[in-house]
Amino acid sequence: MKIGKQTSPFQSICTSNPETIIVRGHDLVENLVGEISFTEHIWLLITGQMPTDAQRRILDATLVAIAEHGMVPSVQVSRMTLAAAPEALQGAVAAGLLGCGSVILGASEAAGRLYQDIVDEQKAAAGSVEAATETVLRRYRAEKRAIPGYGHPLHKGRDPRAEKLITLGEKVKTAGIYAQIARTVERVLPDIIGKPLMMNVSGGIPCVLLDAGYPLLALKGVPLLARTASLVAHLLEEQQRSIGFIMSSGAASVISYDGPAPAGFVANEN
Image (cartoon, rainbow, N blue to C red; front, side, top):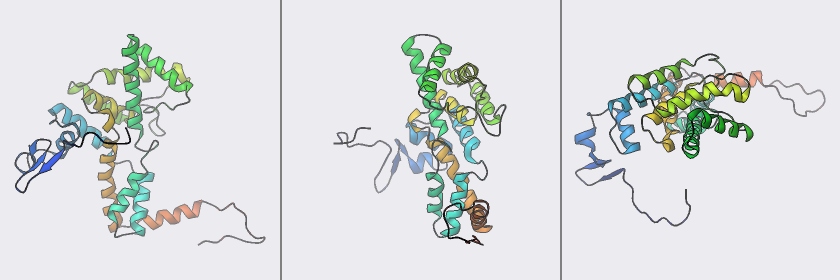
């Protein structure tokens, strides 16, 4: 993104007057509220177009697939933030989202960029998808970059969420080059890294979304939107049955101090 003088003082998402609110060219009250789903609204906001039924189903499925994943770090920090600042629901949600990066919830975007690199390589070389995939994967390895979207600490075989998304893409007939590439990466990887790694949900999400016409630059927003809903659920429960300080105490009980201390000192923080 260029930093400096802005030469295009326009935006095309929303405007209004005292009588009407316009969102992406649609009358919010007359055409959108009560008429379309939130998933459709997300697609409209991001792309400027109403989704087809297939596009809506794909986006909806990816949001459902990634929304909840148990007591992951983003959930823990949200709950502990709310326990410490019960008046700041928005702060607790923000705390959880701020912890979503390359390890947690960022892999979908990284995998999408991997797939796009392969698409670009295939077009530039005018060769096969498999040859382009091998070229890009070897480049990643030479640059000591991780291969995002493959392997999972729990799902050693198939990640059922990825399989469901790929199958849905085929069912609604949006599956295309990105799904082909995702499968090819899985097939080629053992020759590149010496062991098989199966596609995980972070590999499944971008391939079905990109095939459906969702923009690459907005990929990271999908897991962030999905996890926001989950964080709100966890924070409601935190207000009703708080475990934030239990988690904090649990961390203190299993992590020991190994720094310098006076002779004879015995830690007893409890």
